[in-house]
Image 1 (tube, rainbow, N blue to C red):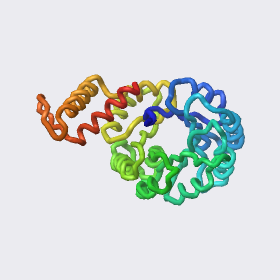
Image 2 (cartoon, helix red, strand yellow):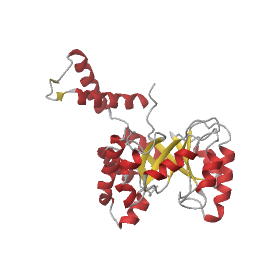
Image 3 (cartoon, one colour):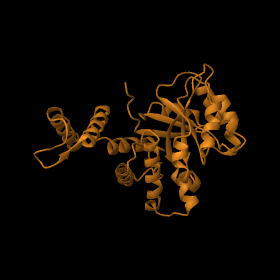
Image 4 (spheres, rainbow, N blue to C red):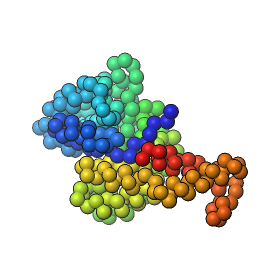
Amino acid sequence: MTAEPVLTWLYVPGDRPDVVVKALACGADAVIVDLEDAVAPARKEYARAATAELLSDAAPVAVHVRVNALDGPLAEADLKTLAPLPGLSGLRLPKVTSPWDVVRVAEGAVRAEGGALGLYALLETALGVEQAFAVASAHHALRGIALGEADLRADLGVREGAGLDWARARVVVAARAAGLPPPSQSVYPDIRDLDGLAVSCAHGRALGFLGRAAIHPRQLPVIERAYLPTPEEIESAEAVVEAAAVHPGALALPDGRFVDAAVVAGAHRTLALARRG
């Protein structure tokens, strides 16, 4: 059975285990415990230990951990401590710039019982974006790629969101070409601007993203609504599937729409998302 697509990912700081516990019950599809940017240097060791304690048992939802910088002194201890834990569903690798970053972690991040842990690469620099397909196809343990737009924006000197659209499209294409799921959108940093979040999600959906990372629970319903199909989209998809079942091959619907295999496949994807909702 195909797993339901993840639409909402909620970031929480690893040095706030009380917040992590609350996040597990707030309705996100997956929780990302952040040991990197959200944690001050003096609290890194505590964040790792607190996260390890929380993940010593199975969690009620998927829990991923964003480890510290792969080229820094903390990532090795993060990986060694957390990878074998039963409550961990995946590792988020920050600032990946080459396929070797993924391979190096994949070869070491193995559970005690021998099963490889799912990895997710974050592309947060110009070099990372340029290496998007090479990273996406680096290792079978890689389950997805995504942009880290705050760091990428700083790296490129881009002030407006539209300046990242080429990089966004590049990552969407690289994920598809490597046989990975569509990437999720990067976080929307203004937790009060829910209207702006909805507009941004609609733009991301149009570019081919699926779902989005959040930094506050109030963002989750907005993201989910934006990425679930509308009643009109569901009705249209149902009409396509029904017509294709009666008349296999290319055909024209009464409303003038042309239907072929690609259109039917898209309709099935729409209905699969609708069943999730």
